[in-house]
Every structure is written in C-alpha cells, then in structure tokens.
Image 1 (cartoon, one colour):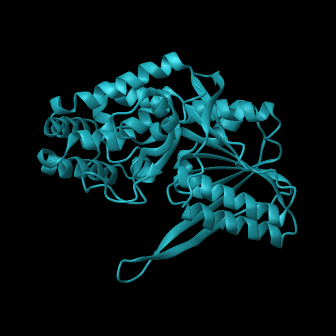
Image 2: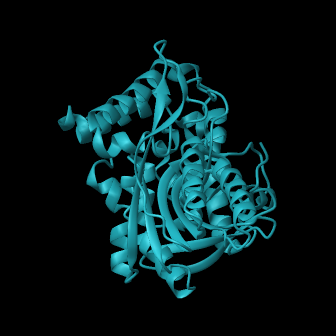
Image 3: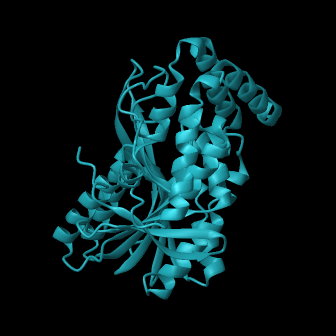
Amino acid sequence: MENFTKGTNLKPLIYKNGTQLYKLDAPHLSNHYYVASNPATIKLMMLPEVVGYDTYAAPLAPTITALEHFKECGLTTKTNILTILRGGLNYPLEESCYRCGIQVDNMSFLSCERVISPERVITGLDIRYKKNHIDANATMLIGDIIATGDTLVKCINYIFDEYQAAGTQLRRMIFFTIGGTRAINVLEELTAKARQLWPSFQGIHCVFFEGIFSVYEDRGVTGINIPDIDFYWNGGVIAPQFRKAVVANQNALFERCIIYDGGARRYEIPDHYHEATEYWESLASIANEVNLKDFIEEKLGYSTPITFDAWLEANHFAGLKKVEMKRLYEAEQALVAKASEISLSDVCQLRLQQIKSALGKYI
C-alpha cells in the first residue's frame, strides 16, 4: 500500500489554547491533513494510565483549536455529527462545537461491529444500529480511531448510500482521529468516490492527534506487537512535541501501542489494565533477549547512525525551525547511544508497578 506521506512536511499553522496545529504540506493529496499537539493528548498517548473520562477530556483543547480555525475558514456550516459507536464517543465533538459557537444541526449514530464465526474468526463487519439524519449539503463531523480503516470505510459507504437514496449530497467532512498513515489512503479513496457521486464535494479535513502514526506490519523486534493494530512511529509524521516528551520519559517509548484499545480505556478499564500488564509481563519474560538498540531504533522509526539532514527528511521536519529540531535530534541520538546502559528488565518491573498502582483499583 502506498505511503502518501512521502515527500510531505509539517508546517506550523496556528498556536492557540496550548495547542500547536500543523498542516501537512502535501499538494499531491486531495484532502487537507493536520496534526494537533497539546499537553493533554501527549499525556493520553504516552501513558496508558490515562483512562475513563480523562480519555474524553484530553482531546478537548486541540479539537476546539482546530474547529475554531475551521469556523474562521467557513468550513463548519450546516453541521451534522456522526458518532460511530463506541470509539466515537471518546471524541468531544458536540462539546467542542458548543464551546466554539458552532451550531450542530443534527447528530447521527452508527454501530459497526465485527462478525465472528462459530470458530472465532472475524469474517466481516456489520452495522447493527443506525439513527441517521440526511441533511442536504451538510458538513459531517466524525471522530474515531483509524488503524486499518475497515470500520470507517464500512460506515462512510453506508452514509454515501443513504445520501444517494435520499437524492441529496454531502458538502464536506471533518475528521478527528488517533490514526495512522493508512487513514490517508482510506480518506483519499473516499473523497475520490464522493466526487464521482457528487462532483461538487469539497473534500475532507482530517486532524490527527500528536501525529500520523503507522501500524506494525509484523510482530516487531520483540515478537510481541500485534500487526495491523498496534501504532508506532516508523514511517509516520509525528509531532516534535510528542517525540520530545516521549524521549524525555524514555520508558514511554517502549509501550506496546500509543493508544491500546481506545474503547476499553474509556469504558472497560479492567480489560485495559489486563492488556497493558500482559504486555509488560510478556516483555519482562524476554527482556534479556531483546537487542535494546534495535528496539529503540524501531520505536524511533529510523536506523542509526543518521545525519541531521536525513533525520529531518525522515521525520518530515524540513519546514520547522532548525535550532529546535537540532536539539530534538541530539536528544534522540543520545538515547540510542546509551542503549547499553538501560536495563529493559528494570524498565518492565517499574512500569508494572506504576500501572498496577494507577489502575489496580479498577479490578
């Protein structure tokens, strides 16, 4: 699958409400893509201890910042919020619109669930619940996690069919996501389809929190990661603020995924607790066998040694201030250089203690 982030760079757009909003400089793409970085979403995606209501509250400030910008650009007229149950409930779209003074004309709901055979094999996706409002020339707001994008494609194709059946059309879509590079492929294809249906469709504006991540294609250096599910940095476009925070709190670099299961973190915290502790216990059991330098490089998303210019290109930072980026580059290289001094076994034991202390009360 083509990586549409190639040849792109982050460009600072606005700084407001403690949020740095970047735009992806990508003239070859049909849609508009943004990365929003804020201390609350950094903490959410760096520490699996952030659970419950805090997972909903964390994206509030960056969502407001982006929506205020879109409102100023005239992109939020006739707004309809589509909530894809249940992951979409983690995104504070209605509250953010209210705080921005954006009128929400309607709200729609879809439930897209896995179809599992008697042999416990996932055979497809099925929309089990729906309550839709078909508004002519609406701007549809959506929030969801995008890994493979299968759920999103199923739901948006359903919405397209509903609009066609009603003899009307969408104007544009605004999407907020914790997601990866595959989201760009999916959204580009959806826009191409929408323009076949409605030539005047104005495209999609997609805001990624903390970065356009990627998903593991295999089980990784440790053999523990889950392909097509776990997010990490390699091949992505990660906000420099997020990279800086994780490198400063180096144990966070070794997490299995930047979000784990978003629904479990909000609604089934005991399940999330078991998932996080199971990962660290599994990593602890093989800690002495892991090549830590390879592990760190996998997590950072590049092999070393690497020159500063090559690092800028690899991370899509050529358009950012060189002095600030040089400090981040040096911090990352210093982390790789001290790999031999880090005890992964000690890191695992510390993280298990911290997670149990923070989340043990939920089991």
